[in-house]
Length: 242
Ligand code: GEK
Figure 1 (cartoon, helix red, strand yellow):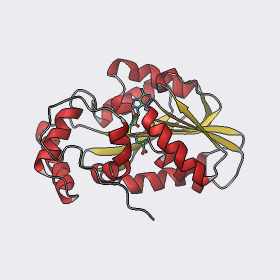
Figure 2: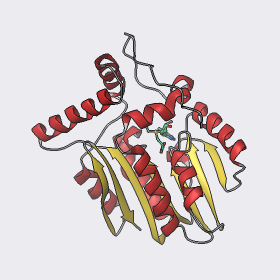
Figure 3: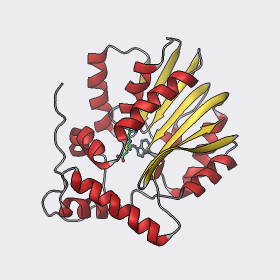
Figure 4: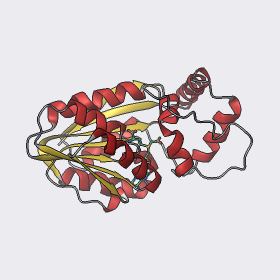
């Protein structure tokens, strides 16, 4: 298998600009996310396993903020029946174009790729909805309405998988886990300069919340129960039942 192109976007000093999912990011995204999210490969693989269990025949699966399709492809590889469609949505044309190229080689016919803002996408007849590190990029004021829309478009018995960078209400604990996360990035080969420049670029763009806030919003959207099934430092994944 080809090695993904290495992410060195923040390796040399550059002016601080807000992070965007442009062609430059899309071209190194596989390497970037694997070296930046502790447990990413595990989460992707488990999303596939969860989808196999919950994807009902004749239903839709949504991967909202699909990037290059990591979660979408894990789901299509794991779901054992053939009677479903996946809507993979991202508003970055660069991501969608690259994902499209992957699909051409995969000969996958179950996946509809949509370049759109996920807040504008209709959700219906859904048995599995995935927000894998995407909600964190949606403005805070729009998050409750988005979760309500997702809930309302899901069938009873369906699941939402929500993975997020999180923060902690207890400040010393928050600082510790951010520090441990930065050590994780160093161990992945990122320099101090790369870590600090990326952190500044994400500051206004990626807004983390506590697990308690996520659970409360999910419950207010109407989901019957919700809890974390994965956590490593300041990254977590939650499952919620419709
Ligand atoms: C994975 N889920 O590999 N509408 C649509 N897409 C959006 C929006 C929006 N409003 N805002 C951001 N995105 C993927 C990883 S990455 C996570 C998700 C990260 C998209 C954005 O273009 C990017 O592709 C993705 O959400 C977030 O499992 O980079 O930390």
